[in-house]
Image (cartoon, rainbow, N blue to C red; front, side):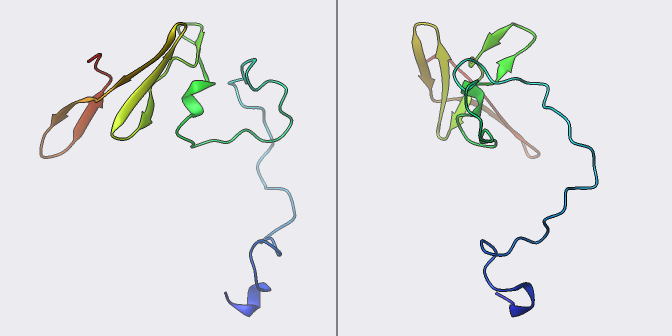
Length: 100
């Protein structure tokens, strides 16, 4: 690590001033599973879809969780695991949850 930046990144942050854009609250509120946590909630984790709401349907945690090579869905009565179906072409690969 370049000494110009003071050594370890963990010891010396790049900046301590707030960002130039305004702070705003995220539109998706934590479900009861995580509502009492005061620390930041992890994002971009494979299990994020287990606690995010699906507003259109009024459900929570029923989105597909991709843990390759499998897809996982939580249900009221347990979980469903599948090996996803795939559609391949020269320009894309499309995968979806397939009850198998």
